[in-house]
Image 1 (cartoon, chains in turn purple, red):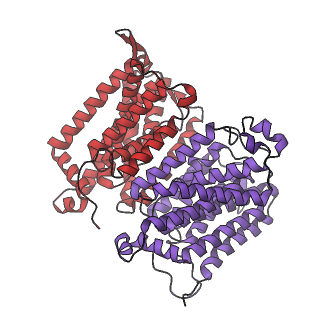
Image 2 (image 1 turned 90 degrees about the horizontal axis):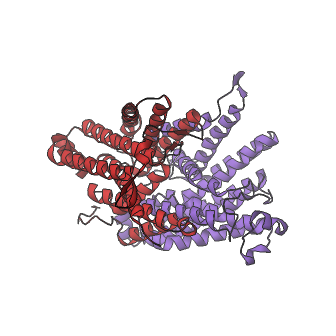
Image 3 (image 1 turned 90 degrees about the vertical axis):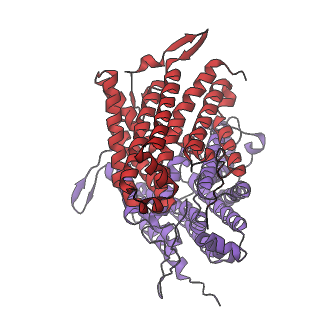
Length: 342
Length: 296
């Protein structure tokens, strides 16, 4: 019998729970940073499901986050307030209203369907062509959401969406993403896809269909990205530019900094980069560490994060975790010889 | 939709600028297998140099010298600090590392100059119109086409007729074999990075004439579009890459002017749908007719 290696899922879940518990100890204003971090964990885990297992770089996943956010947002704004935020909304969306959990499920489903439809043509590509094509998906989604006011607020922010994503919901969402990612990675599909990542020709020779395996992973990760988008819109008033380039860069960087080929790496990367970024943002308003008073100029958080991301990539290109899962016992998994191919 | 001569001139202008950016990105990719996403930030740095020079009241030529100095120094630093340690790593790691550099340079510009940006005024005379046969054409459009043609000509002479050019071509064909045959890796790569930087400086001058307001995200969108164009054209060879850059610039420039506003707002959608379609039909590049296939 194949061992399930439950410790591979326990370690990332434990990290998420620890982050959430730590978040209960701090003030309400600081708590937002923890919640935001946990949503980022969901996005990065969604990225891992496709990029980590397939080795193909995707810049398009934030468009599924955006679609998830749009779905959950449009359906949970109180109907009375819809004309104010979304005056040109299509008729069938004007009176539909769902509750929090339903909106998250629908966000995930829309993300999954969109990823499946986009994946049907795109998964035939690999390497740089795949990277640019997924980037094109991001550009198209951004452009359409920005100007199509029949399906959302256009350039306005999603204000008055119920703010239901607190620490608990964000942590639960992240755990759901981690468990789905783990089950996928341990399944037949996940194993076949990793085989194509390690050696495309050999995997084809034993009968693995690269196209089909990538499509499955792309759909699964689109599903999780949609869920993360739903969580995001319930956290803060999402606007079209908050689910665009910056979010794409930071989440990809989190994945690569943590170690793209492992679930543990995805979670560690998201937590480490978020923790640093949040702490620096706080330090911009003045804080103290070990008795030193620190007051950084505004905007320096991005600079320090940029320098550290570049430094990690240069000094430790396989990421903080080396792209390995955390095993509590036994030999560490050695399967990460080759990393994600762009 | 009616296409006027002025639309065509705008298309030629943007096409020439994007062709130069495509060459700059393609040269570095040739020797390093690295897609430099931070290329736009080199252009942005050059544009800020021009803006500062005009703010200090420097003459136009001094501003251009400063622009070249800043961009070349920054390119050399990028090669030294980032590209060299990353050499030989997987393309994904290198690409994300150049993301980090792009993000970093943009944040520095934001901290230094603020989000409102600065205005480069010293070269505005090139932005005025010339009337040729009843058609108003901005001088910069003609200057850009000539400058791009001269740059590409010089570059092809350099690649075809000089020793370092031969080394660069050999290195981009097969780096390890070229090294075994006596090509010095560091020299070739530094040279390619510097030429690519010089092209970024030229692009900075031309783009600031077109849009004098320089903000920290200056040239960011252009880089994304050029990258798409380069991959659509065929990144492995210089001429297809340049053609790809030119084609996407020309199409964007002409359509952006000729379409009515309610359609031109969806221009990115049209362009990127076309990009996806081309990639699906010809994943190795629209203009790449070579027959080499990646070996297993």
